[in-house]
Image 1 (tube, one colour):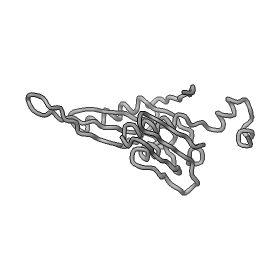
Image 2 (cartoon, one colour):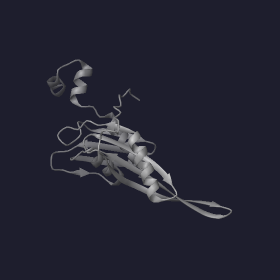
Image 3 (cartoon, helix red, strand yellow):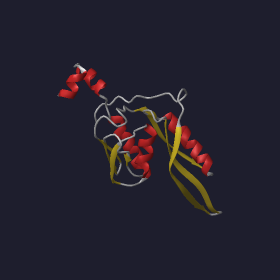
Image 4 (cartoon, helix red, strand yellow):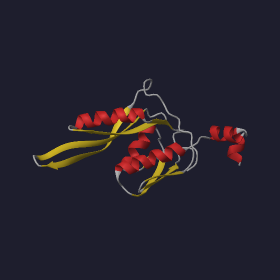
Length: 172
């Protein structure tokens, strides 16, 4: 894998909106009977380029969601957004999930399914085309989408890394 600089963000100075992606009821069977607990995967974002995901497990649904939100705020990343869309197409992979995201023209909207939609809307992307291939497990799809977003680079960063001017990045 290539060396990618992940921009971590502190959660204290930002207002976040959280989205529940998936909640599962888990049953543990013991000699004394069944014990139920809940597992929730949550995505938080400020809809302005910062997003994170987290997993929470607890005996009650609300506690599981709260733990997921706390975990998500510990794993925040900064994503480049240009004119309401992403700078370039990107593949993301995690376990059995493969995700493809592609920039779209203004007015297109977020064309994505379930777990991917929650991540892309939380990050603040307004126009994007996305396709999920392979596993449809929400945990894997969220992690693959985050992986694709981490790999995105804006033209300013590319120009700086190559040591050229910004207009040369677009002209090739």
